[in-house]
Image (cartoon, rainbow, N blue to C red; front, side, top):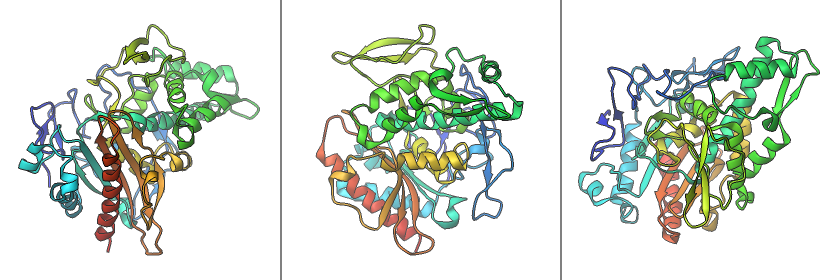
Length: 435
């Protein structure tokens, strides 16, 4: 069931488990035993959340009070607690791999080396991760993949990072106010400055939040700016301006704060793997405010430019993600473990219409509905990521998280048809997994 590999080798024989410097932490350490330590050179700040656990093995229960978030506490259920390596639903995993290798229309997405060795390879054009969350599996998810730890350009799928960080910010500030008994705006801002003192460019509270000091303690809510930008960043109806909204949010939240949230939630798994934001999207002119001690502008293809975080401690050359990190986000969302139940529900609601292309251009897939989704389409990639649930009356209803990330290189209708067909086959495999 378990295979170890070393990150950075010439060929990664499997995507199952990435080994590293297990004896210590190391820049690429993935083991949960030491993962609560911050990534070297990253400035981690404390984040509060309401922990949720499955004491009965069938459903989650929320803790009575918030606690400081740690990576080990954010295990989605398919990492071994002792060392942080994947644990698979071996039946589902075998079927996913066979589906890709043995179906000619899917095998064309794989490198010749993958087809020869029947193992994922960095030259593959597709990465897949699927998590069966049906019934009691919400507590012990069934994981399966193909190349899920191999990084790929993120596209718009990265926008879930800003959505999550924004909700985390609101909760962090409200906890500062309530636990500290802070009744004035000045007191809360002073406390935030103290807690975030190591951040060079902390979140811009004046732009991001509304502070109400009428009650016993300050109450923090999203400002009109934040609400508008979050909606227009993720909703498929605002594709023409979503890039600008995302760039503004990156700069207002701050790369450092976003990074701290991603690392401590486990959505970033190592120096070289996972969901990350280290530069803005390319625009003709990025108008979001920047600070020379945190960022610099660089030209990007023709007349475009983008802003780069120059203290980024990772190995990324641009913002990237993995199928593992994306499916972990959607799994934690389904488990209502991102910030707290209310924030998780709000994020799922925001993402209900997070994707219009490519699946909407093809015939609908009957029997399943999308609970949340965020796709990504650029000249290089075409990604589909989602929570899907059966519309049948069967109990329990088949329910799963899926990430299918594809290198596109140029607009290609065949890739859209591949995604549509492959998602339909994943529906079938989940149903077979829950007879």
